[in-house]
Length: 457
Length: 112
Image (tube, rainbow over all chains, first blue to last red; front, side, top):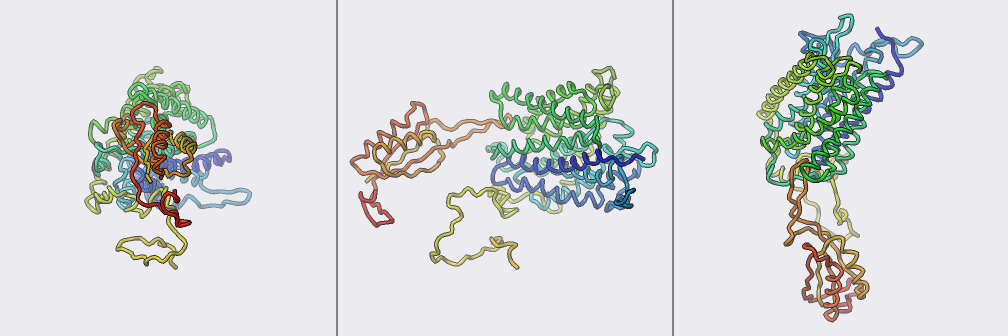
């Protein structure tokens, strides 16, 4: 049993806050990309995930992911730590505090850190269903998806068996030994393929792709991309689970691979479209972050540049696939997260450097194809499980309560019909008012939400 | 009395205002509008997908003028906005029946 380490604990508490900030960052990134009439709904899908998944994680999610294995590395025991029981016993004060640890940090620090991963993975999916998915069905889908897709897959990938064999973890981490440092499979392939399945089940937006659906606020997108990169240091370097050399290694890769991916995306745009765009820069940042997520402890910084550059260019091309195949993955969750996650996970098999903290040699470092096939199997397993189960969940929710807003609501704008709000008031009329000229009494039409809603008492 | 309406490129607004001030025109109303003429719109590219933007941002300037100065005002506006390129805009006038200054109740030319 390790002893508590204050430095490790401090870094993990900070990392948790960093990763949590990624989800509001994602809300800005996605929100700026939709039309102004749906910006609030787009952001609310991310915030909704923060509400729902945060609660589910404590109730049973953590236990399903990190409880002792119930068979073949497929699932943690949901009852073991339900409500986080067993994780906060002991004494917290005095000269010799004694409470459950996870490695060198308090068990609850690990619980909190991993909660933020579950939240953002669910939120990532929402980019595929912009402008058209009712908020209630989104939450129902999100809760079921987290329960039977994310929590088990997190167990496969993130739950390591203890050295003494008293705790048994997931099959990808312990039996297959595929390298996924911070979630290329469990987070990005998982969310990316789920987004594809959900986008196909819910159907295209009205008018897509014939009608122009321009991003309404690219400055929000840039701000969101900046917050994502900032928070991603917690995501990747925090996954070292301590303030140590592995964390620093992962941090440098998180800088350099992301930089390379942005340059590569812009280069593709310059050659293909003539102009490097700000949306391309923001997208390249995210593609690079996705690619280096699984690889940041196993490739050298030069390998990180290679993985970032390859993935940035690949994703810049992959965002065009939806037009060829006719699925409305509105904000390119597939093109960026699925393709980027697959690229990052599989490229480890080529670029893994034995001098890195993971100490594994890939194909280009004389390791042969041993690591490569493990990476491919891990990626495909998550791809197939998540893709198939997500499609089933989406079809069930669709059959039970429907997924979409009405055509009228979609044309009017989902913000107004689902949330009774509008994102912006740029009216030069400044909301009216006046000096007291008599005017007729306000009549309320059925279904209208009063302006004083919530203020009655 | 005439209402002169000019729809011009947004960056020309400052030049038009300066030209009209030199003529002694004391007021103007400006609105941001969108539209297209012979130049049509332009295209923008987002993640490799081209979008045709049909309606181009323009500024609409409205000025009430007396009949005697209307030609000078038109010439000044045209001179201030012309670049010779497609999309410079249009200027026209329409007759105005009545003008009232709200504060004083003055009517007609006195209210301009």
